[in-house]
Image 1 (cartoon, rainbow, N blue to C red):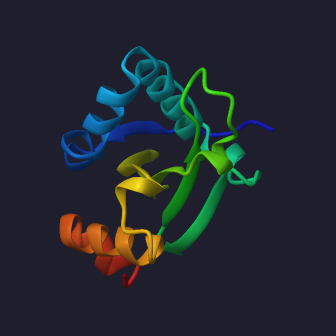
Image 2 (image 1 turned 90 degrees about the horizontal axis):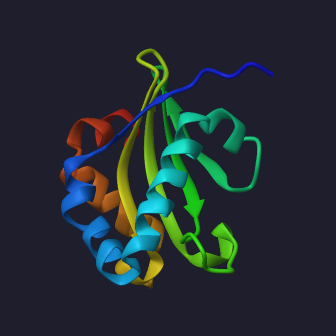
Length: 133
């Protein structure tokens, strides 16, 4: 199946916040992990066919997706790792914007979903509006 290859962009907010924690904790493993995240996001349509990516919402040729990922070299599945990316797909532009990259330990444990939705609303208000977060 011939799939469209998306352009991948890490948003500044996620670079400044959560990615710094991954860089400190995993050092050289993070570079390989980030390369894997980029590759997976370029081919996000394939990941949506698996249990590794979940479609959260769709509106106006845009989609919000949660992607599980594992740290390179650590023998744990992406789903079990507790590591997630929240992605904004602009299907018209062919872009995947990585809004958040986090570990479940980085976010409030009592309601992970509500916590990342609150972060999206605060940091990306236009995206929050599109999906009524």
